[in-house]
Image 1 (cartoon, each protein chain N blue to C red):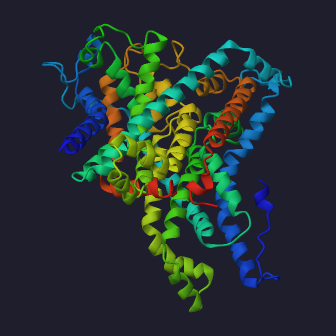
Image 2: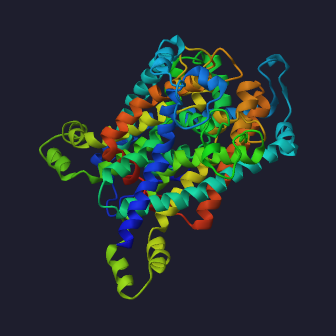
Length: 277
Length: 310
């Protein structure tokens, strides 16, 4: 009985700890901007301090914010598709083929996952300005791909190791080449793993901040996290907290939907590749 | 990487068959794009940083570029700002990882034990992971704000007008809370995976032998998930050492909250000092390598084995 109460308390604590800040930012987004400027401490909007949907309307009417959402969606999607495509090829090779340099690929992927991103922004900033990639979509897509490849390769390698490979051999016995066996037999089986890797990659790109603020300067390529941090209202010394909160909620909705729908796959993707003793 | 050139010898098969050769070629072709992309954006810029760090080079006056050898490193390493920022970064790393390990393990235990509402718990735990760090930084900054936040009202021993971002210690605490909230889910998922591998039989056996809950935890469960704990700590520690987003959003590095990543960013992107900034980049990279090496050595983590790759 004691144990049941303990788990129930733990359950409640987890829910509060994980969801309180989310509830808070939603509550904040419904406070009126006047109330924020005058100072309105407290969790919920007070009487007369609520704004209804006004903050959402205002933030949505902001040209730069809409452009940032478009940038984020476009850049994250392109980076995800390309990164997963390349990682799928690599993970297949690692899981299935014997070739020289396999260890090198894994070591490189591991090293890059640990790489301090900030170390790169200086030289990349300089290089991108020289070759004209600064403040463009490809200028962000390329680093996103490089930094999501390790996670995608690990996740996919772990998935590919679980696939019943006799099927591939059967196809090869029937006269298929390595490539045909890959295309016709393995791709359909591996699709769920590929999908998981895609979700995790998309998370990374959507979440990135360092590249977003360092490698862009205007709204042509600036993604949401960077745009939010540059978001200044009429009074530059008093940040429009409730507007920002509304923007943050809008930026978070797509991710929350993905989390809710694909919860099982995300957990599998994060843990299956990670620790198998 | 000596392994790259290591020739795979096929035991008992002196001449490599055409099929094996074709497989070798195909394998290398398939990994080539990934390798090229990863190296283009890391190895090449890193080498360039190494090169630039030997110059006194500022983008505001590019024609004044002059060779200074190790001068930038001497400047950085003799500057008290560098050591203060390194100290604060190490503090961020130690405190957040310690808290995350404890909270994350408790979460993992609950997730492991709980029978009802497994899906709801997992989803709630994943939500902080999915939220943009910048957004969570804002959420916590506003929550701690004395003008519009609720934390001063909820905490009984803190005055309503207390300014969390006015001094180093409270500001660092606020940043740590935000960082811990955002990254604990990742830790607890890795620990959950490790927990799932501890055999129930062994725990039952210990129970039958009269071991208390505490003894079972320390003598049976924890030693058996050592690999998972070490991998989680290694990855989180390296991540925590690179802390940047939360500091940028919450204090912009003011009141002594600046981390070494933030200092590097400030020098290169805001002040265009590519020479000294590159030197800081190299130092940051070296310190991450040092931490990785220390953790791997101290705890004897076998990454290849833990990740089942080798």
